[in-house]
Length: 112
Length: 118
Image (cartoon, rainbow over all chains, first blue to last red; front, side):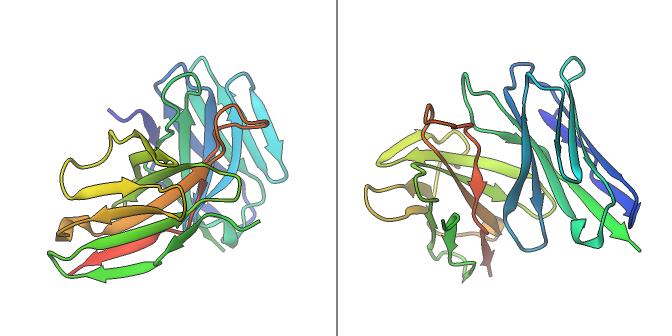
């Protein structure tokens, strides 16, 4: 199966919180990333977390890492229509091949 | 500080022609990575280069595809004798050298080149 898995779609109402989940298989992952891709654009790095951290918060974004379960989540508070995009989870291991492995992306649809 | 630049943004080629995609990394970045994104799929790693050196090309198709990152100028991804299946978005990313102060190996992406093969 895939090394990094994400659900493909998430639909939320404007103003609600969005939670995008990701699981990975490589227990030696050092860095875990969230990227955002708007239609027709490249990937924009949103945030990243080191594997020795449990949580990282940056304004409306909260990243939670459960290393035991190899589960990463991205919470977007007060979701806006401008948050509609594809969100990619990625992991890399700095001690070896540090080419990040990407999930297939979660399409977040925000409706009024 | 300009971000990663890619050109052209859109490229149309007929079957059998050559496609050349260019990528200029961010200032201070000497590592370049190429990825391919097929419709409704995630990013697939193709090749990782440093100046004048291919570090990892495990994701590159064995034929028709090549990449270079010369001492001067942008990195080039070349696809010879394109076929319809090559139609995709090709993204370039760059990062700092490993071990550089504050380096996280974090990759910063360009806007991509969308290749359409007729």
